[in-house]
Figure (cartoon, rainbow, N blue to C red):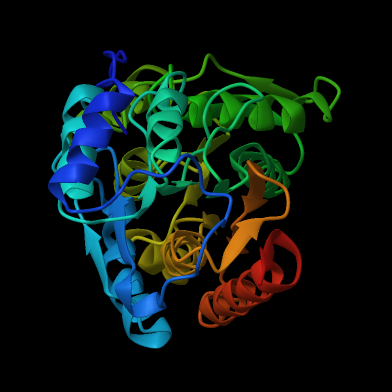
Length: 349
């Protein structure tokens, strides 16, 4: 997913003006002070950094959350086009239209905290969904995301297992400046280090998740130049995984491939044996549970027990053995997440 250099977000006064335009009175924080509002008055916005297949499950999950929890509205807006200034403009517009809970996949991993700070200063509930800010500080009320380093570690371990514990491994991943990409690189390197030199890791192939065409060209170039040397490929980004699933099958090379996510192409390739495994994430749980928690915060019914807490939304190894049932595991994980927010992460009146 493309990341752009952060351009300064409008100052808190702009957010305040947007709140005034919506007829809302700015509040100093999301501490839960004052009388709780009804959940059916809360409007939640789910705002990815731009269009990408990963976020499509957010749409149905948001609608389900609206229906199940009786929320005033849940909207999905991916029009930022991977530009931080445009994403901030989208958020300001939604604030002006009365949205008081925001689940955001920030375009800038380093400066998205400025966006969260400005929203929270004006009484808006915030969540980093799908990607936590880079570094050790999360200024959203909470982050609900895949533990991407752990997921990449699982994927690399599965690939190495399929390789018989030795050989040459290639890693395909996303935009190099993305904090998720750096975590994934670390996870793959950790798995390779555990082989004590039995597996050689080629230089990471980054910046190839912007679209499927870019990924297809990168995979084709890799196989043309080094395919005969490669024993295994682990892809930790969506478009390269889809591209590799097709390219490896067509090449006839005996390369073991472990992918990410559960695109139909990948699932079919697991079923026919051309892809060894994939690591499914939980975007549905992120949007469903995230919308619920945001509504609890925005209504002032609850506060965060540990502000800024990072919660793993889960990752799941899918092989031929469990390809027909893995979604049950994912649904169970989402149910547990919902319970965890009620029992542990939220403090409610």
